[in-house]
Length: 565
Image (tube, one colour):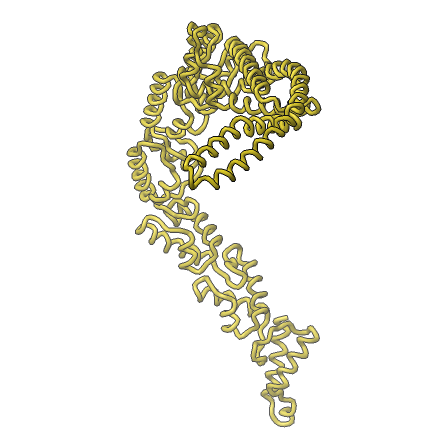
């Protein structure tokens, strides 16, 4: 095509230089442009017009111009600037640049879709970075990308491919270090780790120093420093701390026989505390909130067994270390398999003791207390029933017609009243645990009575037993009183009949004496001026009348009305 174009150019030049009649064949600029455009449209000529439309470039010439501009600009050019320089449309320049990069043999590349850089430019960039790096000791890929206005990934790839050649440095994550700078930071890290006295997180430490190591690379580097210690979960544990920790745990456990888990957390034993303690004490036992020695378990089991053998009670808080919580004591008791948690519903056939609140009570002692409770409640119920009977005999207010319902209501009220009084915490404790002469030999009752918490706990447990026995004895006593009330009904009916016979005569006498007293009072008023003793006589007679007639009649009337109700 170039030869053909050259021939056409020569022919056109000859026509343009001709004179005379041939001048009519001369082409002006407009005609020439139209001709080229026509040929381009017909596909006879492949050229690219400039933005002015008066000049045309062949693809080969355009690529040469692109390559030349890249070299002239130091190996880096933006296609927008190149389009303005060549005065060619940006789309045409981009297409030509893609061809030039593809034909460059990896010597050119697109840093961005709108920019071309050469490997020579990138080599020069790395040499500049190396100069700065040797002076400062470290720099980051981000700062290099910002300084040179290049994508981070292009910078990372460029630097990584030139490490050990142009770049005399080490790349850790996104930071470049010189070997000397790395050794300086490692020496600083070694000194810091040698001075720590407790577990220290490595991440913040190396970050403060300036190292960017992470994960296994950091662990390996730290262990290569030769500082005595180990790495656990991203922390450096000094060997001195580990030894001190072991000594403290062993000393506490051997002295107290117990190691609280909360103390373990304070001593940085966050996981596997039982396994840690068992390294020195293989028989250690894990409870809810602590670890105890087998000696503590055996001593507690022996105390519970003594409680059972001597038919007594036990407060575990008096025989176990103070560090044990209620949940710990409960778990420890379960391990003995000697006690259960219900005094009324026995489930474990092997259990010989029960748990009431914080106390352990032998089953035998509990049965003794239940027998004593039933005896005391029975006696109290009988006494209450007898008192109710005496009250009924003193105030005979029940008629034969309504005696049954009234007696039942009165009996229920008396039962509830007596139960409320007897079953109040203080009264019930006094009834059940106060020692009489017969109980003097039983020291257990005295010990229970002197222990307010224990006596209250037992009283609450025995309330139902007391209530049942008291109610049964009271009702039995009242049934005997009911039979006496039936006998009394006949007596009261006979008495009512006698009152009805006496009342009319006594009432007539009262009216007669009242009329005489009224007449005497009138006459005394007329003679009061002559005889000062007359009013005194009237008053004396009035008092005698009230004493011997009015009051007996009023009492009889009241008794009659009561019997009628």
